[in-house]
Length: 117
Image (cartoon, rainbow, N blue to C red):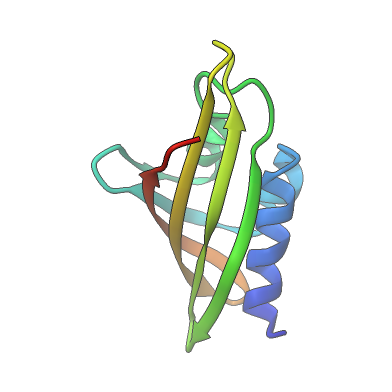
């Protein structure tokens, strides 16, 4: 596995534990996180505040079903399930596009779609 893919896998593993320090260690200082139609964050502090999300009852289960890389772009595809504080369940499929720089995540664009739980 390449170093870029290893960084993305470490990021995913850390995110499933809400391990803020480990997530932030995978990010460039000027990281951007874009979820089209939802938000665009810039910087590690803004990213850190969004890790746990609003309404989540605990860390999500993230399954990576595909991880591909070309040059400094890594694409991860998979599923997310997350229990919600109101007793519901969030179920998504995702495609995350990571732009890497020197082994760190410089930009993340997350394409998300809800699916029946």
